[in-house]
Image (tube, rainbow, N blue to C red):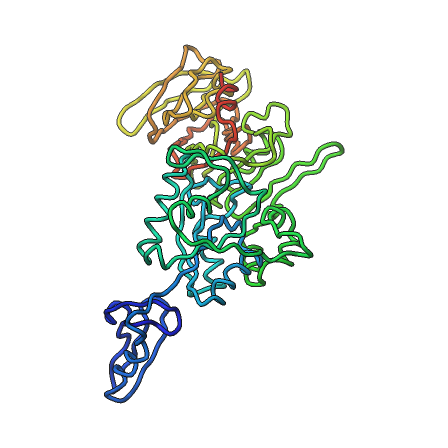
Length: 455
């Protein structure tokens, strides 16, 4: 039997755990295939010496300590359990749970981020991920499949720190139980070791309190973890704010999402200014209509809707729009419009303006002008005329539109109600509109409420 003296990985065949990293100039360097532990020599016996350093009892069976948690984030209380596993001479298998949960206030860190944090503290631990399931049967099956790839059941000990208050009523294999996941491991024949978790003056450290309080993070997280979470904006960083005599609007960036406190205008501002960060937006309604906002401040099991933006270009200028692009003048304007796509002419008409709207924006200015309301799942555009010489209502697939304009008065291009450009009169102008490759994600705790508002 061969076993790495550093990380404990073992095999009957040394070739499964030993790699030749370098050979040349009379020097040979070998390393452990898991942890990278190296031994080298400039003698012909160098390789043999390394292999012999791995030899252990033929009947040796490495033991593993299994520890499960969400680790949002991993703190010193968690570390006390992993340390106990190591003190007992076992190799830690750390199972990071809820990896399929959409990021919210309870699950702000991704699996990869939590894995990175733990690896910086325990580089030799074995780390695996586990999905949440509605069925405890599927949940256990998923985890057991992974741990049995590492070793047999008799070599794995579950380290549990759950108390009576953590017990719940649940069903497993068509039978009802009162307990928690250690109950299932016990039923399946695993040895369980109950230990005391590290406490602060008798009070258990809770990750949920650390998520709320940066000072607690400084106290109960390892320095390298605290520094990393700070860089990731784990506790939030205000990136825009507006204070009035009675209201406070703000945009706060977190590790994996952006919270917007305000009304729909604040959300559009956030999308316009911060969509480059490629994080989903969650709105907390503080405005009048709160069309794009949620009632609750806390994000809980949200549904994410992905929506395309429009892009308008004029000469060397361009801008993005979430809802619509409007081109036109005042109520007395009478402008010549010619709308073409890359293949054919769509329409020539006269009027005060033209509106090109996305599905999400079709319930706004487009609706007020009699335009078609598109379902959110639609990727199409709506083109609607404003005070035109005949009805202009088109639903088109996204394409490269060219709009040629001649006006006797100055006119504007608006993106989501904000002026993008003012253009001069008595000149021919060519404006192009296309679908942006930028996709914005909006988070809703109750997406049905949002859809209801659109009706």
